[in-house]
Image (cartoon, rainbow over the protein chains, first blue to last red):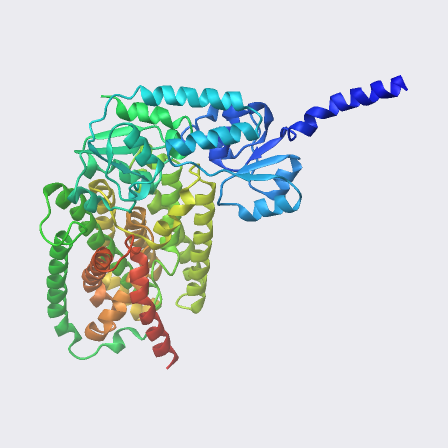
Length: 257
Length: 329
């Protein structure tokens, strides 16, 4: 009798952690560049698959680490073959794939893809808790806040963020949030501007992401000689491809005197 | 087409006033091109005028001139009223060549690679077509082969863009299939102008050979203008013009098809008589289409300019229908 009670007690002791907290995902697949970066920074041990884009240093801040981690296409069959217990994705894109995965009983979580620093704080904390790594999340946010508080008082210079293809970043974009955090005034209205329309009302400062290593018509526009006379500041594109704790590095670059 | 037999009375007399009229129209459109843009109508500041409006206006005129002249020469050399560099797939092959040079970073390292690769693509396309034309001259099989080449080039283009190192390259397929001149630079003008000028000079000298060919291949050979050599010279000229033009302005269709048909009612059927007028009318037509592309966002709540090839196709498609009706009658 005593032996049975001891066995029951032992069994309860082993099972309890699983009853109290939901099982920590052990095999996580990310199908979006932004969730790729959160996943690698928060829980590299749990990565079962990332997108190819995570390995591109012009798009991803975790390119070096991602080069050693597995990648997968957004294809239900390929993802299922990795036997994931959690799939991270964006609110848009590959929805048919995600629906197929959910039909197969895979847990899918869609990230909100933050567009400003309060949202970055909330999303980092949420994903850190989801992945069972709240301490790493808190450390990332502490470093981000240290960078943001180190920014000197702003000049409120009118700055236009010019994106590939001539788009300007609207007031609620991540780019505008970075400009404001750096003490600049974001002049963009979110419209696509031709170079002529831009030069008809030139901003005091032009901000562009440094062109990635591969050529495109969209980024060729940013190096057009007609823009050469405008004061310009460039930022590595990976820092703003997605909003995350790393975006604070772009703010430091923009705020430098 | 029955060659010189279809000459309306007085067509030769009308040539000089038609050329003069087209030249004046072109001059007006060139001036409008320098005065119109997103910054508003009028003379803009120096940067906008020299760095944006000048290359755009000059490229519209040059590329249009080349396309109009190419259409006239191809229709004469192949003795087929449907011949056009776009419809026959030469433009598509040029786009393919330019895409390969551009997205694989070759033109970023060596700028002239862009027109050279467009040229190589156009040359391959024309060579493939002429090989077929040599076997079945003037027949519908040539147009069929051109449509096939055109579809093949478009498919390979999409494939090349999907496989390019740039994950977003496929989003730029509109430009390579439908063209555009927005925000081109003086570098593009410098790259495209020499091959286009050279090609036009070569094509303009083919008038006599095309007139001879219109009388039949044997007559042409007896007049010292064998058909094979005429076709070869036409192919080289068209490759120079279309290859360089497509590399900087993308695939612009219908200009070469429409322009000769617009001119024949006034100038007659003799192929040599419409070469210089086709050059001028092609330049004027593409300039007018580009002016429309620039003006539409000023007049309508558009987020961006419509692709240039869309406007030329809107203009050209009804003409294609008219030609088809006339051929059926």
